[in-house]
Length: 373
Image: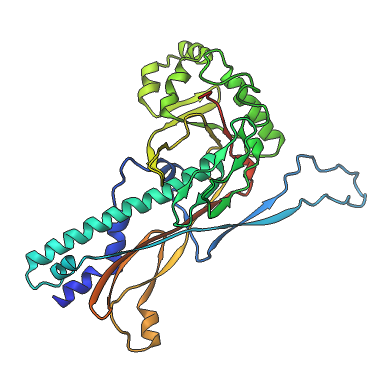
């Protein structure tokens, strides 16, 4: 019984179950923007930003002294990792099941433990997903005093972002207001109309914004991310109908699939799903009025998973060195259990995560308001 109980508390087994927890409806932002993150032992992501000089180097004549070259300025930006750490105390009945001598009763306790662990893993994955969603749809994350995620407000025209009134922590990623709202008159009424009007020149708006990115020295965007509920607006657009007729694109394929590629040089991707905020409001994974414009690949941002030192054994260690040996570094999501006397025996499961992203060029992302309502 003792060996079995120790095995149940082994951090490696708990972490594996925790990470494999199912999600309620998928994690599109994690899947699309946080695959293969790099590990780090730091608490922050260090990003170096070099000023882009869109100007040719000067010419010279052979034999002349070298000209003084303009050196680009460089600054360092630090982004703190998002950290989550929570405890769930196991009920006494479950603890008795785990410590029973009967293997069948032990199995019942183990099943309860695994169910609780899987539920915690689902919530933890959703925390990561919604944090990424807030970063990649607004450029700012608001957290309440109890750690719950809040939603800042964005002016649909000016792009000015305002923290939620209950915000305790505001984590801003430096996205300028000219990359939100009408994006300096590139979208919306100022840019020639919203995309729910069939005659709006969607592709001209995108071309104007892409041209502005090039002039600013930013990596130009190629992908347009929309809520899947907005797919009908795309196929009803006059420009799209012309393109579809000339390129044998079927409306059903667009509505049923995840998007359409190489549409006048842009790839349209549709995401769907919801998350529930602290007030019980169902919020779409991509705001219905908005879009995300991003470059291809992932070399335009940095993604990291932090490191946590996890206890690998339960009980009193013989000395300090033994205590150090009983800890191991775990990257990203972590989970472990620990028994303690208070003076009664108590068992708790601990769950957590360490992750973050950073942008060398905060102007690389666009969050335009492209629908009227």
